[in-house]
Length: 275
Image (cartoon, rainbow, N blue to C red; front, side):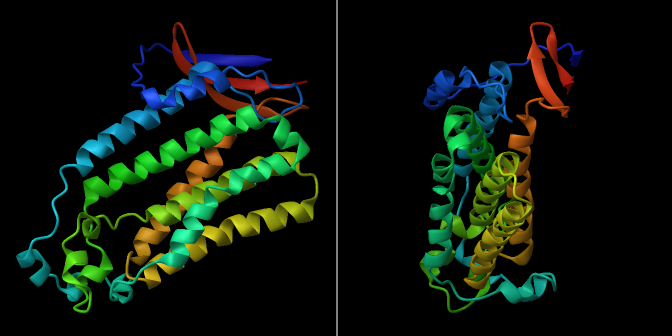
């Protein structure tokens, strides 16, 4: 049984041509016992919203100017709050954190190793694409709006070319931490619905929590981010990775869920019970 509550609206969604591939999988039929389900209008709203934010962030990025020599000379570590100040260090390459970032994009391949998730690959694939688009787009627009100077720009040992790059103004918040949190929490939230072993779930969530935490530590330790950058990235990325699968939960076996829906008359929420 579903109880549908709608609010009249006429939403306009901006599409990216590069997302056309998702049209094929968003209409996929999901077997009855699958814990997740797709609803085409909802999927396109999520994809379109993320794409619109992403286009906006790219436009904002194009307007970012690097720090001038005068601005660099006027940077004062004493202007930094006590909680963040210890992050000031010389610029250092971040091979380890880059490796963790790139490896996190391979985590969805673990779905292929488990029979049930392998059977639901179309649904899970759409959900993951939505997660990545939202995470990347929101991170980008916040970075371009805040323009926070990176810690290494305050250190006299950092090469000048690093201080005068556009990246030196894109500290808040940590994209590496946000992306790894989104990926790891997404994997944990999905597998939580398929695994039956309590011990397996504990190990799964522990790993999901530690992976982005290690990434954030390495980003701060290399002078790329303040502590608040890392914490914010962790929280936002983790929330996106958790709640995208949560929105796609299907009703089964006495479960109840609240899901956003869209109809010809508007958009609203569906409260769904299975008996």
